Amino acid sequence: MSRHAKKLRDHDINPCLAETDATTKCMNDNNYNKDMCTDYFLKYKNCRKFWHEIMMQRKRSGVKPEMPAAEERKKILESMGKPY
Image (cartoon, rainbow, N blue to C red):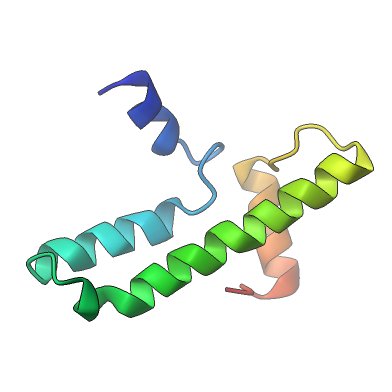
């Protein structure tokens, strides 16, 4: 597995790993018919948008690291009730 692929599979780097896996599974199960997986694509897109906004907010506030670690993200989601 390439270094880039390993990064994408790391929970600390990719906040939308579960959505990525669900989308891939849907595509595999439905013979790559994108129309059957629209909900999964939308959940992934909303996940990326949510965490991008969090990352930009932290960057503006000078918080490091800009992307919260997996443990911190879990706490954020629990406090907000999964927003996507």
